[in-house]
Image (cartoon, rainbow, N blue to C red; front, side):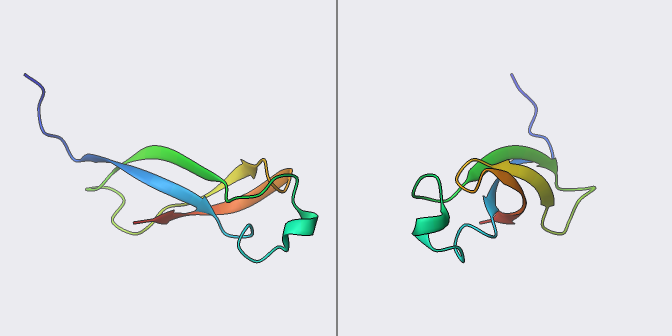
Length: 65
């Protein structure tokens, strides 16, 4: 039986995809990644620099609910 730990699955969403008009994107939509974080060590929301395939560049991805 698995232990119930402090790790939770979080979703990271691109911050620039919502503000850029669709004509400047490679494809429609918003870039999202899923990852795990330790709730005990990281209480605030995650912000990671990840690759956004819609914009074809590195952007900041923030944790969403």
